[in-house]
Image (cartoon, rainbow, N blue to C red; front, side):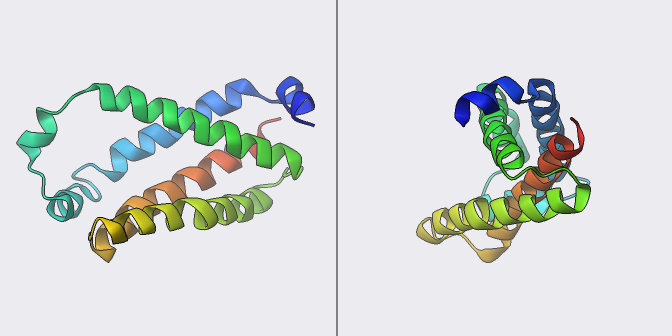
Length: 138
């Protein structure tokens, strides 16, 4: 089964999905949306973020490629071909895995619900967008 997926998958759709997901993160954590409440909840200043390592962007993009690759497998295996089916699958995947993992990490890190909603919300929207792209781009 996995061999068939590897031969039939749309790698360009995976790449584009990861780029869209990454761009969403740039918007999500920008001053336009959630930068200030996110920084307040993680206890970081703009200066600290600016002076941080830039390699985190590469690691993030690689992680998003993995998320999109795995999401592509679910999309392929479940023969998801419509926008509505993709939204449902994206919600199922993101709520079942991402939201729960973010919540668990934040509970143990003693971080608040607001941070959990900001971070998990980003991944829910990102995975849903990626699933839509991969479902409709055949």
